[in-house]
Amino acid sequence: MLLHKISDVREQIKAWKKTGLTVGLVPTMGALHDGHKSLIKKSVEKCEKTVVSVFVNPIQFCPGEDLDKYPRTLEADEKLCNDLGADIVFAPSPAEMYGEGHILSNDFLTYVIPPFFYTNKLCGKSRVGHFDGVCTVVNKLFNIVQPDFAFFGKKDMQQLIILKKMVLDLNIPVQIVECPIVREPSGLALSSRNKYLSEEGKKNALAISRLLFNIKSCYNNGINDIKALSETVYSFLDNNHALEYLEFRDRNSLEEKTVADNDTIVFIADRVENVRLIDNIELS
Ligand code: AMP
Image (cartoon, rainbow, N blue to C red):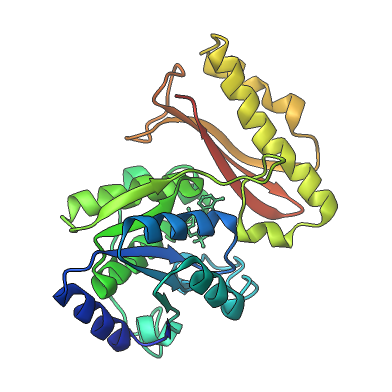
């Protein structure tokens, strides 16, 4: 069932809750691929009802980013959700979520601002305000759908860590389910933004996951010196890459590691053909 109005979603959820059904929510920006599919499948397995939201959230894009050209494929997305057994595809307009004049108007003024310590690093450093937009929209979706479970991918690991903190800090009655990164057989992490890459660009992008796998195998072979592990970057990324960051951080606090250990996640953001790609690997 494709719904665009918050009131229609609320009505349906109310009916389900009355009969005690468990509800799963999978928040997405659409252009659904196998990564999203794995989240939806998990929700359908675990919950009696599944809501997939498809919303390109304007307030999580920074000025100059790809808000206008972000792929929008609602018809195909709806079909995929139906095929997987999802019950509602919730696709609101920006006006439905934020009022006619949203951003910088009086229609919408209340944001959820996650802790600076979590947002002043990694993606938050170059995408200032991005996680405010993410936390705000996810909070709104939680209030609209009131899910028992919400499914998020480890592909966006910083986002996942920040959302878990938000749920804990604000006592939101939802259980976050963490889902593994889905990759192409080549290793490339699936992303809606991969659509921007040419065939050549896709080939070049493979170096990102190869670099991460190499770091993990070096770690497994006993190397825990971060300088030594980081230096491998030069043998993987040639001048087709513009590296934004490669960082070793703690899986809970996001603090920088001095020595790699089993709580370390290696985060990378890199541009290929000016497409910003992110990936990460857990060393445990
Ligand atoms: P997006 O549509 O990019 O906002 O992503 C919606 C959800 O799908 C987020 O929880 C992402 O982490 C998750 N996701 C995106 N790509 C992947 C992937 N390759 N593997 C697992 N989860 C993913």
